[in-house]
Length: 288
Image (cartoon, rainbow, N blue to C red; front, side):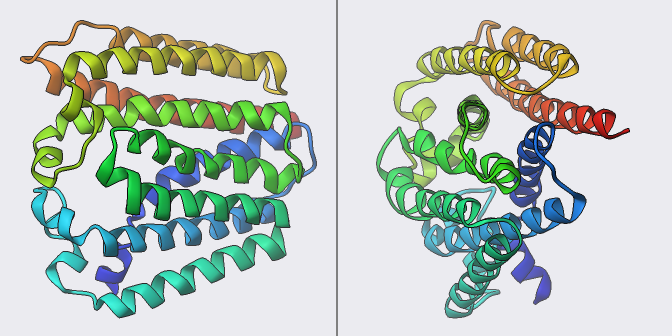
């Protein structure tokens, strides 16, 4: 039973988002005072809010999940968790998460995380995901909120650096998500989810992905130019961006798009871990 309740919070998504929370926190801590306690409370608060959103997503997407090979064994689809109990569970997680951020971080980070929650639950899950090829774009807004919350937990104000950080992770979401949609295309077709690769084809999706990876690379360098990151960040960001661009710009056909998309997806994870990791290492070097 406990395993089922844990599974509907989507632990993998939570962990991935906490990496980006840490990235935002580390970046802000290069210019503002911060401590490990604040980082832990921020990550706990964000984790609970994301978990709540994922539970609601599981509740609302039961009909879609039943049609997809990857998701048809989820606890709510199989009836392992009562829907009413799941809703209460989501509400409790949301209250705990927002209370922790409000009490231990600041009201601004709490407001931003709630805006991200609204975008994910209402605009993405309940609306655009099912009706528009722009659902991925709407989802990218909520996906870019965790690093921004990590940043605001330290600074308590929105700066140009914060805007660039938000743009960076929003742009990252797009090719990352399109890559998933491409190698899971059959699942999306069966579920009737109108993602770009399904609705407009591989060629159009490839064009968009190249544009997003290029834009991501520009913003990653701008974060160095206009922010407080150091030359270590510039070196790592340049390397991972070039690596991602090299993979993304390779020719794609109907015969090779699945292995190509899997490769682009794997590199996208390397990109976010590389950038987050170097920001953490820069912070450590500043405190030694």
